[in-house]
Image (cartoon, rainbow, N blue to C red; front, side, top):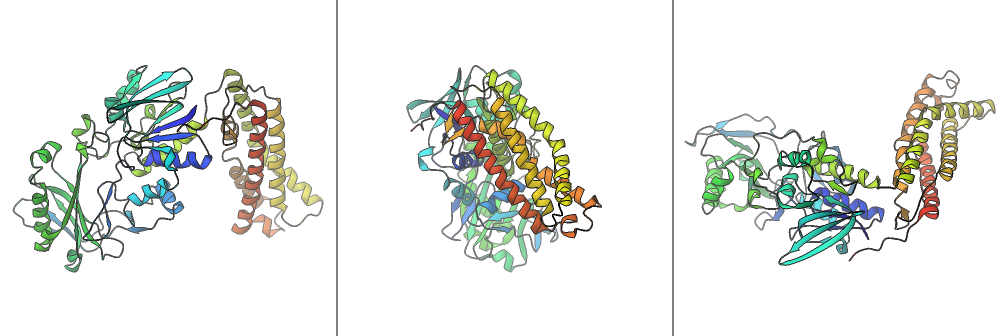
Length: 521
């Protein structure tokens, strides 16, 4: 049986799929659209020769560490949002512009070369095409004992896929409105889903590409704000590439979904008129692109047609729990406890789901054994520093002068790992239903989980002890280790951890393995 089904090919679903692929897990990803990326949408411009973002445009490294790290890991190039020169304001519909000064508007925002779709493409490159199913709209999810059944519609055809667990990386409001759940979700969860706005779902965005950035040549930043009731674009910004040679302006539409529909035919003219109002006649020649997210049924629910006045507080713990005995998990940026609504939130949700997937449902015998082992590991944390101190003093007493910290820490963790293996060998564990995927037992992650952060915490405590130790004051290298020395220690302990993890898995597989899961086509 398939291990995991991910529904939703936005950033959350793609990041999760890439991680499961790296782990060699059994999964499939289903997406209702004919493309991947969800609300990330970059379109090519013939005039400027670059990709224009009609969805998310920016991330902020100071407050978005996950996406900053992912961009670096994927080898993508980022650049700062252009925020220099004069900002324009328009308070009245009479066209009388005013200068709002030249202060930065976007607070250190960064963009990606190639548009935000570069992020999508880089993640998709890590996922085999055989794992992807496009144009598959989820219509129902059923709990069937130890598995879930997911019902999809593709055109007029219906299909059912079974898996041990389902991850629904879909905006909560859209999911609650469009997907039947059997058994029905409890009232608290459904209420939380309805009360969670889908960020930007009721909004629209326009882009206009040009042969050159004429506004920059006139000493303008490209930033502009229109606050009168007749404004079509409430906010305008410079959307050029990193060099400034590929030129574009972007804007957020101020009209409501109902107004946009009423003016749908004339919308290009209205957008063009406001750009001309701000930047002069040259703005009339722009190549326009427009995206109304309120018309996207897989993004916008009926409740989302009334957008929130400000960014919601996305931290409802109800949406981050596992349901149906761990078989049903919810994703999408709006389920995040941090960064909700932003791409950062999508990655935070994916990381949380990764942890939840590691917490596989187990029978009562295995559950009790895992609890006993977690308790044992917890007890080793305060004892580890004492073990290190004993090892250090023993090496000092034998006149050992080189690599004292390195040898003592390595000896400490290796002793703890040996004892951990002995503890595991004595625990009762039942097999049969424990799957092995690509050589790894489903019990291995929850067994190793209690050790998360163990080595880093031990190193930090050991270094603090060294700095306060009179016995080490005559050993400057050990008393205050250099960054290179500490990095060497971390590498040694990481190698010991890898060996321990592989040994744990091999012993668990030998004791409990069920037949290997077969991949579903």
